[in-house]
Amino acid sequence: MNVRITLINHDEVVVLGVATMLARHARDIEVHDPRKRPQDLVDLALHDPSGTVGAGARVLQRLVADPRLGRVVAYTNDFDPATAETHFRSGYAGYLSTALSHDELIESLRAIHAGQRVLAPGSDAAPADGEVWPGQAAGLTAREADVLSLIAAGMSNKEIARQLGVTINSVKSYIRGAYRVIDVDSRTKAVLWGITHGLRAPVVTHTESAEPAE
Image (cartoon, rainbow, N blue to C red; front, side, top):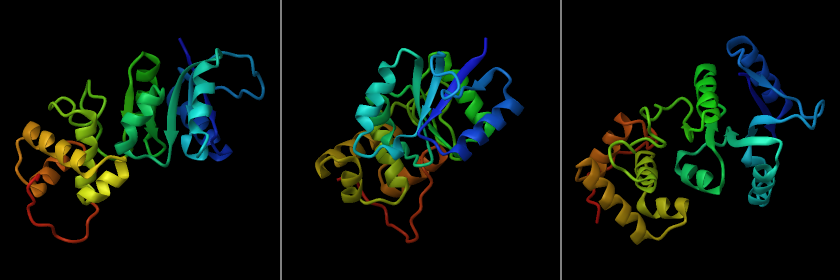
């Protein structure tokens, strides 16, 4: 059975690109133009939340409540794995980067249509089978994985706290929990673990010495 999708709040170039790519590589997925047939039912609505700053929650509520739409998926070039938990909690069935290859996008759309919750992190390493976020299979919570991702990106505890909207003490608690799970005792080892397990690659340009969790 075909999967019918629509793109919401995306530039026409993105819509055309996705439609062309799917026509070439996935005959079972078709892009629906709501302007031509507004009453048609759609299985997946690919919404870009980055263009609805200040009104994102209201827009998402309206989309989720729309009986013509099956599942709503965040599909954006403003992709940040650290915010995945927030997106899923707000009602999105998937959180996808526009940097996905055609194979990754097709696989993600099919999985979401089948009822799975999917985080597809673009060109970075994808989570292992059955994982919603990288590191889940190792025992990390979503928040611990978020914190490790930001550590791997070179952020300090203060920057991580500001990024996630939590206290410094909460960040330290997440770090201690994550270190216990992955069995490391320094920031350097945590960065190495993150790189090899699909978390965000570091972008730091300086060398950090090993730093304990506390």
